[in-house]
Amino acid sequence: MKNSPDNKNRDIRYDKIKHLVEVDDDNLAVFSIESSVMKELYIAENANIDKNYIESLIHILELNRTPGIENPKTYETNQEVEEENNRILGKIKWVVTEYDKIRILKIFETNKTIFAIIKSNTQLEHTVDNILGYYYDLDEIPKSLF
Image (cartoon, rainbow, N blue to C red; front, top):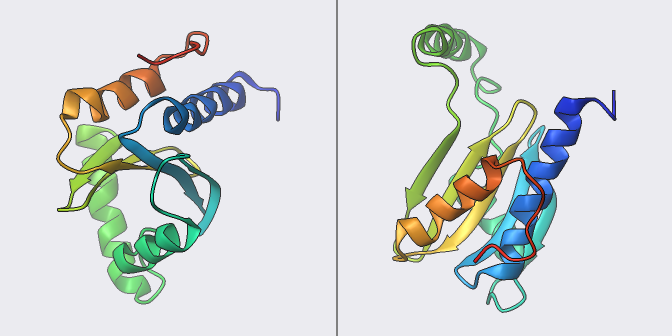
């Protein structure tokens, strides 16, 4: 149902994360992967990257990979482990990966994964902390994050 509260909250969250590339020079791009396909790509105006760069990241890091397609038996084993982990820990909400040139924040939703590409070697509290705090705050969208 398009107008359900859950769909509305997801839309608000994505609008908020999209806004981050407009207000912070350290946030280079944001996009989502849904069913192994890139969706909703937004690149910061002053970022020296383009869609081809993002697509190469997706390819190099296998960000759109769906576990188990190549080897269903392995996937079943991994799925059993994942189900046990979910029972004990709950589902994973987000992950940060740091490289020499970029930082990647992955936010896991039920039907998609949202990726924020951030300048590397920036203070976590000025990038990741702000993004996560802003993303999970479901109040009205502020005019400026900072």
